[in-house]
Amino acid sequence: MSGTPTAAPSEAAAGIEQLVDTIRRLPASCGETVVVAIDGPSCAGKTQFAQRLGDSLGATVVHMDDLYAGWDGLAGAVHGVVDQVLVPLSALMPARHQRWDWENDTWHDAPVQVPATEVIIVEGVGSASKVSAPYVALSVWLEAPAQERFERAMARDESFRAYWERWAEQELEYFRADSPKQRADVVIDTSSR
Image (cartoon, rainbow, N blue to C red; front, side, top):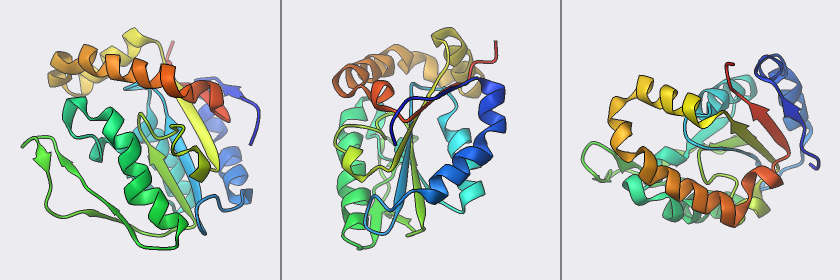
């Protein structure tokens, strides 16, 4: 797709059906699968949006949070999702990925199996990277003001406070290097104000 349509929050909620219709018409971009990447900064609403979209499409959702090797793992996850999920899918092979155990600060023993559905949604910071771009049919960018995102983060998990700046620095580095917002097909403002 080309262009960068922008939607306000209420339009985004109302427009999910239109986005579903658009995705259903897209040709496969990764083997026999249509891959949708939902990127944007922390607490912009990516996970909830991906779940709603995934439920509407009967799609598998891959969460980048599972692929980050802790609070310094953004750069590695960008390549991990390509190597472990997108490359196998493009070769019509079973895909699975490692899953980070955030409580124990290590990888889980059992990998996450990625069911081969017609549409797979990859959501999280780093999902629309330049290395994943050849496999992605549609890139969606979600955003909200930094203060509102911080408030959402603290409401969800106060322990994020200790890592907020550390993670934000990695996000900024990735955003500068890969320009995911500028390359997005759809940009959605999720701010509540």
